[in-house]
Image (cartoon, rainbow, N blue to C red; front, side, top):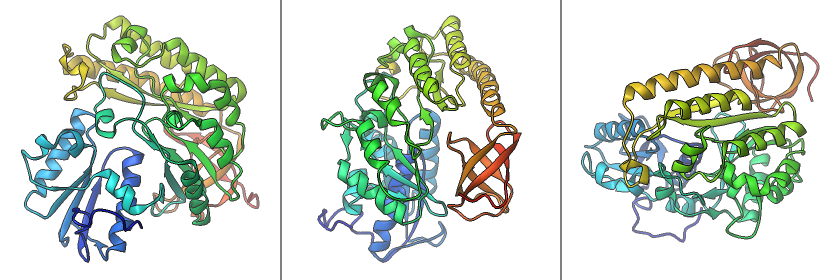
Length: 418
């Protein structure tokens, strides 16, 4: 832990206490929570139930309106307690928070400074998270997160490599690189993500790397080098490419910085080299001014790109964003379009999963959720459930037997440990 931080900060004052924490939002936020837990334990605190806690911490998210409302409900529940908030919401909506409570604020930068590293292990799993960068280089008209996290700040390369080494020693077999836009790593310091991936791939250990969310606009300038960097067996053949819309006119209004055709070009470049590549995406429905024809282009893009997973969000106004001033669609329109896009996405999931049925594939046990079964990943990062109690970190072979849309079911092949 780094002791060179403000002694009068709210976090510094949390010592020898029972603490209850709720965490929301993205992988980056949950990694901050694990860092916060480590700092608190170093300060003599212990985790507790809400009922028995001396202090309560809410790590907030405010990416969409529904999440903001949930945060305010949770803060209201604990308004009479010794309450602390961190995450994105206090950075951009402190006025909303103060309407329901008066908490102390722990800035995410202080968590990072006190922890002194960029990697953390998710409890009860064999999954490590490395925060490679915060902030972004985008100017999306709908996004409040860029106001909260600010401009791109890449973590130093040596700090990232040290974190990967440490996590591998701790038993992590899946290491997730996370940030608001992982493809932008290094743009502020003369480096590039492909270089980083190649260096990570040389680190000794039995782990595979999942690179996190990448804006197509930052992928395009490094596309050829990025595709080449993926050839390492240490890197899951997985890409999270948030598209948001299939209509160029909507992408212009969003200021995303690319065209739908660019997305198809990225997908084709990866799949030409890696045919089983799993590519996921994010879409927003009901963006201000989105016409029926523009929405249809999103449906077309999902079909043509054959995304293996799609996160669908109904547009909601976020304060202080340019899009907030534009006329909004009714909830009915957003709901209808969300349902239609989800139906298209479900067909896309089924097509991707169908390729695995009857095939034998390597699997890596990363998590245990339901009793008597484990969550595994194959080289394409497909979600494989095996109904056996297998140790975390086990690497073997499985025959894929069933498609359950959001995952496939595998049968472990005995005596085939890798």
